[in-house]
Image (cartoon, rainbow, N blue to C red; front, side, top):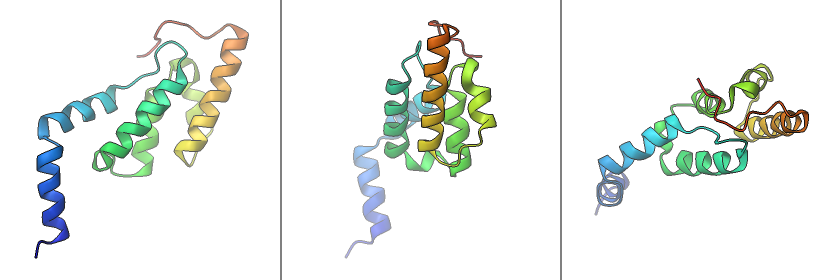
Length: 113
């Protein structure tokens, strides 16, 4: 009989080759909002977080990576709001993004560091 750990290892080796996992990890840590398309960013961020759960050691790191991919114009405000969950951070980011777009202060170009 095969152990759960051994089955996970076999499945990972077959369906998650190391180079593919590395590509997803690189994409995850370098993912940013393009223009003002927060929805696409959130969707892909969540997909990658689910596909590679071992990439993120804890919720704090998850939030740090998510907020780091936001436009600089709202990044500080989202951080200052101290969201406790990804959903909360997403809602705050969406609200700030909507306000920035209404004020016309949202740069359509990518304004990342």
